[in-house]
Image (cartoon, rainbow, N blue to C red; front, side, top):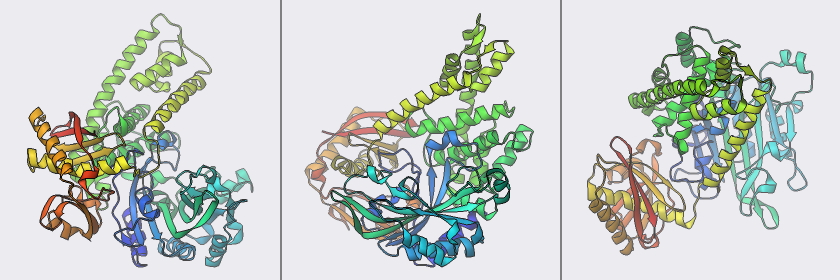
Length: 601
């Protein structure tokens, strides 16, 4: 069971001196460089780069992750867009010897994986960085035979934020890594592939279940030098690890998915089989991901993170049609997911009503859109004898019509379907994806955890804006989310109506008065309960660990302050460094939630 595996992992490392940190939100807070939290290490970047963590040098967690780039990959037995990453970190403390030994003990002793089923990959070395013989020797020492340790180049067994070594900028840390693979179907595979397979083969015989990054080098203008602080960054997929525990290569047969699959079987009137598995998997994965994203505050829309929630729901509707499901059915899955995660993430079940409403609203809207698409199909093919790839792609992009549905409708109308329509359609789809990807990279370019001067100023301006809103509008104002780029601050907050011009001017003036006063900004590390008791604001308190950073703006952090909030930073040291601000826009986001845009002037 997932809850048991998650607990075993965390307890194992707590017993070895690690402190538990809570999962960060799926949408990185105040990080304009990336849409989603896609790995366990992403929230840890500042600490891996040398910033002190308030909880110490040994940390462990299970991090919620979402990878939008895997949406099109879902349908096989192992890809999922939402997943949990089990992680442990050493920030300049233990290194390879302890990490490998502990990981091996956890996999073989705690969760009972046969060591004969474990295969290892390590860095092969090159003319710059030597082969990682140290990791190889430790794996052999703990009990992995030499013939199950494979060596790969930097494209497989090297980690840095920029990818391969050649792309690393000056000042960037990185290092070799070592992956653990679980072997499933050795006998059946050997009949088909012989001895040509290896752990990084995508044939299905092996599944990666964990990766230990040995962050030990720094890129300098002279080449690579040893890092003074060597870090361990481990990440292991909870779902894949659980599949290995059950010796089940299909991750959709683990307990996190089974209740959803059972429900789909009921509404579809058919069993989950190899023939229809892709449709079941897409629906199960996409709805689990959509539920978790909406529970974290992302609503379906046509922009940014909301676009992907909308895309997940609409793809699930389309694949439901492939199973013969014509009525709305997705809303019920929110409750199923909430119950599945009621122990690990209770907030999902607490918000299940609003999550269900968001999913059902989007599902019904899309069903109406599909009906319009069908009408457009009839209109565009009137008097025609052929279905073209261009029309099929237009219907797909505008109305969400899958190619198969266009082909099916064409066959009903006795239209000719060209033999290469699938290739032409895919070509257009790939070109569109490339354009979208380029636009996304342009919008969110840069490294993770942007700490440019402008972004640091906006971080502090967020606290000033929050305090000013509560002073002008009332203490009912609570932050609902924020997003910072180098050009502006976006801030969502609770308030029942549109702000008047006088209210906006009052908020703006109050912030600028505080800026002119050059108030000190101080940081304290303290227990969360003590911080809250002292008046610190934390409207997402559950995401913070027991030991927190508290930023106070004012002359006396104990009694003379205008803002005190739990926050991970970074911030200026005096409000005068922020500079004057201007509110540029206000709009509604949802019922009772407003959004302000603010810029430095």
